[in-house]
Amino acid sequence: MAAAATEATILELDPSHERAGRVIDDIVRLEKRIFPKHESLARSFHDELKRRNTGLIYSTSGVGDDEEVAGYAMYTCATSLCASITKLAAVKESCRRQGLGEALLQAAVDRCRRRRVQRVSLHVDPARTAAVALYRKAGFQVDATIEGYYSAQRNAYRMYMDL
Image 1 (cartoon, rainbow, N blue to C red):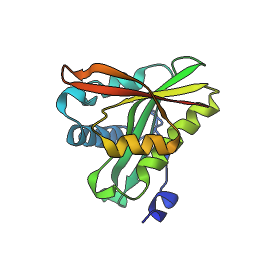
Image 2: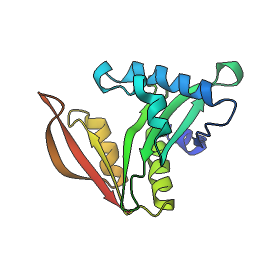
Image 3: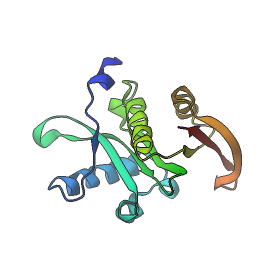
């Protein structure tokens, strides 16, 4: 089913668009379903979007009133040297294994590349093997293991890609 990602429409959130509020509400609901409460940006999502040089890309599924966000990725271009993908290709369960996460990740990296960023980094739990494999496939490398990043017993890989 890889063709689904090829046909997926990837959009960048325009906060001034009339649908922006609905898109953000969908993303917050998806965020709450996918990530544990202590890792979720749901409570601070609106603040994250207000940060300078932060972008949000997303894809939808369904049609008309049934349309909802299928996945998203958030990135921040902190400087011209380095960007960070803060939420990575979170995809709702019914849309997984169709290449959408890979398409969202690539779109986020492309947005950073257009801003002439030299390096993109991210953090991921090493236990999330599918996510680690996705990032490696996209060209990310493990830079370091950050002890206790998520909690006292949960580490993170810091991964990067030079553009």
